[in-house]
Image (cartoon, helix red, strand yellow):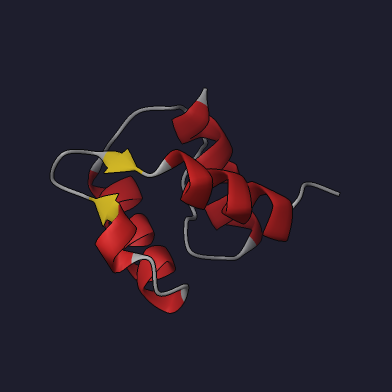
Length: 67
C-alpha cells in the first residue's frame, strides 16, 4: 500500500511513468532516487533496503496530495 501511494505521488510529480502496482522494479528505484534527491531526503531513505522513514513518507503525502 505504501509503495503504491509513493508511486502515485511520483507519477503526479512526473518522476515515475510506470503503473502504480506496488512492485519494486528498476523504474521505481530510479524514480525514487531522483525524487528523494530533489526533496533532500537521501539520508532518510534506504534505496537498497527499500525503506523510507514514515515521517518522510507522511510529509510527501501531505505535500503532494491526490487531487
